Length: 277
Image: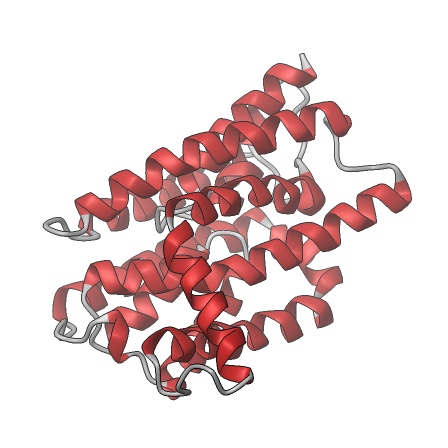
């Protein structure tokens, strides 16, 4: 039964990681409705996110390799420092600093306080509305090659908000990028690139913790590995879909879904069907 639950959660992780609807919130909530009726926990969630970030590496492989190669060569003076790929390398580094600092400083809150379902429901609704307003009224004439260092840091600060389940990493970074005037596909691509070091860092940290304690979460190592593999395979498909969709579609369907999910969650909490912790 644990393997079936892990499989379900892997599917959920892959389906929701890259959409602006918060994969961690879905993992947190759906875990309550599975036979074990338990929060899968921050460790399980972070490790399975390694799978979805591997999907990012596969999908953007050529782009990421080029960025890393040119950035490394620029340190030796073999590539100009103003090369767009070199700048992107520095932008990802700068944008990762906020979540790196806060993720380390707020570990206890991430594992417990931030997983309060009332908080999850509130931020699902609140940040959903913000995303909808920004996507509707913001300018959209900047492209990914125009991301400046101040903008990269600002989007990085937004990414740090995703430490709270329900905010959504892709939702927060995309909202910030859209507010700064970037078109939808550029906002999404930068969000994906920015997430790579942060998610791998978090996942590998939790993996180390799991190896040290022998406890990767409620599904054991077998279930956690299964969920991670499934999440990666499904995540690749979702990335491909989202990048095509955003060429012509808006974020409105995701906004409606976030608000509806948050409202349903509040009703379930208020009626005692679910408990906050």
